[in-house]
Image 1 (cartoon, rainbow, N blue to C red):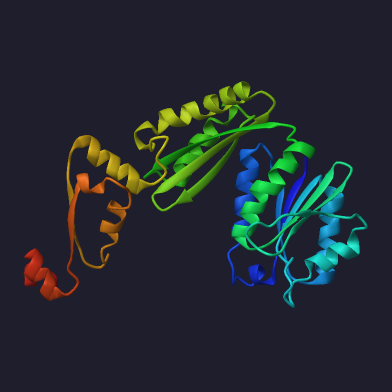
Image 2: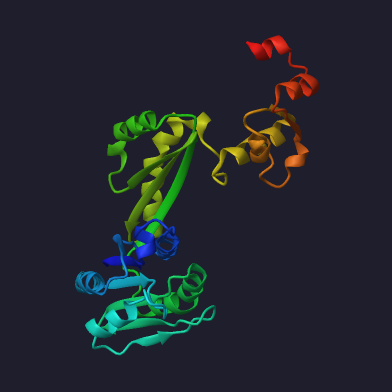
Length: 289
């Protein structure tokens, strides 16, 4: 099933607004075993919208648009729909805002037009779109995914091991997503039977888990700060900071999660040289060096 998400709004292309709608829709669709093929961002321009919407409609079974349904002078999506579709749409209730959404259907092809305001779009998707989608266009495959998070190992080193073990199971797609201090590996298999997919993914992950066993974050922990807290709680050790240029950032990370008071004592932020000498007993000569 070909699925595309079209985000409409010149403000998205100019960087005035972050496109959280496409992220939300892709995440929720994946959870329901739908795979999105493309994200498209379009300006509030009638000609561009008409051309691109028709192209997506012709090649996809499912299209979801967000934005451009309002009544302000730059919103023109509704006028474009009226121009390119002879179909009479089904109105979708907007429990949060004033602007309704729409469903256009032709045979087994669906186009959902949703408002661009994230809160309105999210509620409408959950209450209106998803039930209709599951009823009229159920997924034709099953997805199974797992995530491994590895700390303090370079992306290149992990990638080398992934390449070396690629023959273990080529039916599993692997995504590598590095961030500061962490590399997230996403393993995805798509097929018919969940139990079979689970076996494929676990087999593909096995050599990676073995190679980096001591650097893996626990399955239910996605951030180093939480892993740090768990380590201190398990070992019954305590932690305190003396900070300067970090301006309390380390203390903020250490106390990000509930229960931090069980291991975190305090942090002294001494920014001026005088404060470092007075509160932390740092020798003036050392500061000068």
